Length: 129
Image (cartoon, rainbow, N blue to C red; front, side):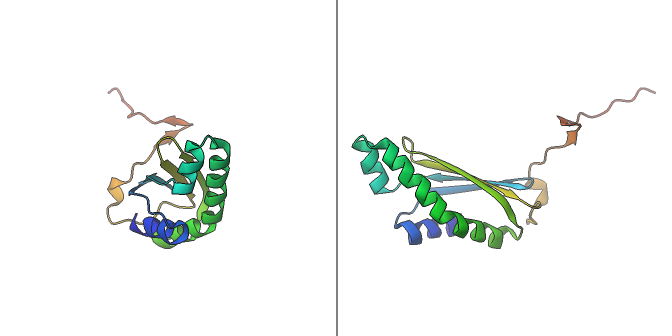
């Protein structure tokens, strides 16, 4: 979380107020609070919402390679895909990193896993005696 805040601060001159990260099996969800920069806010307030959204998309694209490298260095596995979107109204950015493997963590039991059975969540089987 701190390294992502530092990346935004060094590259955009703006630090999100809070960064929350959660690993789900081989996916990493990141939520950035107060991630919208002042120029984007100004454009949106002046009715230039389309331009503000384009600026956000361009900033996300510019940060993408650095964010992928940062995530890879932290979790120790390849980033297969990176999805992100920001909401100007709330100032939040959501990022989902699709990882090549479930990363090694201090407490692996804390990572939620989806058990699959033909595309459905598996239910405990009940055998009659």
